Length: 287
Image 1 (cartoon, one colour):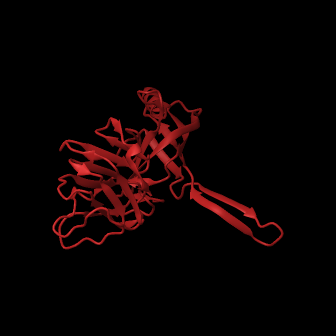
Image 2 (cartoon, rainbow, N blue to C red):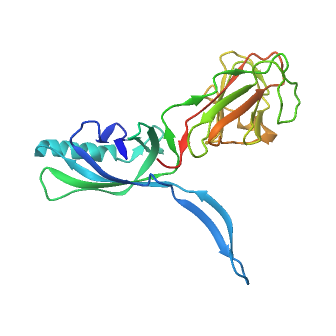
Image 3 (cartoon, rainbow, N blue to C red):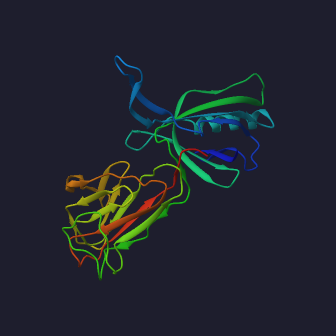
């Protein structure tokens, strides 16, 4: 099923390398499912109160080998190093990037955290079996191609005037609307970039019927507001937190379902020259 597999930059499957042989990968079929239910008191049946995807456990089973003792030990040390516990510059734990491709040419990535124990030992002097387990908090398998709406200006020549009520049907002008295709099989979380001079920008997902508005004005053409829907952050120029400027009514964090998504964009000033760009990677449930 797989043609290549990388733990960070270390290739442990395919690609002509001869030190690693991946025999099995468990966990690419589905993440864990969290089901909350209880029996109906005094009657037949049960009630399902919630069902969500949990983390994705991944287990890699294979062999590390070398043509001689030195080559084998070097490969074994490289594997151990790739599976080390990692922390960022602030001391916070960070995951291991895992990237793989399937036999049909598709490439996916997921971030995992090493789960003990890391096992790689055996009686032979030049080879040993290994078993490596990861927990992937974000269960999605992300495609390698970043999708984007491109930079969308506000509607002009037939647009709309704020205050307005979503959903909005735009007139015969240009701008104000972009599309992004999630070619995967599960929701993906976009990052929205608002660039340039904008007055109270407002974003609306047609498929989710959800809006997010900022009661904030940018005046510099170099200003960039980054809205991370998954991590629920809004940053101006990478340093200023704008969460407190989120509208009290239209404040939704929304994901993009599979297939084509339409995102509408507007501000409260027809003279604004800034733009919106929505970006996201396709997300899949399984390979």
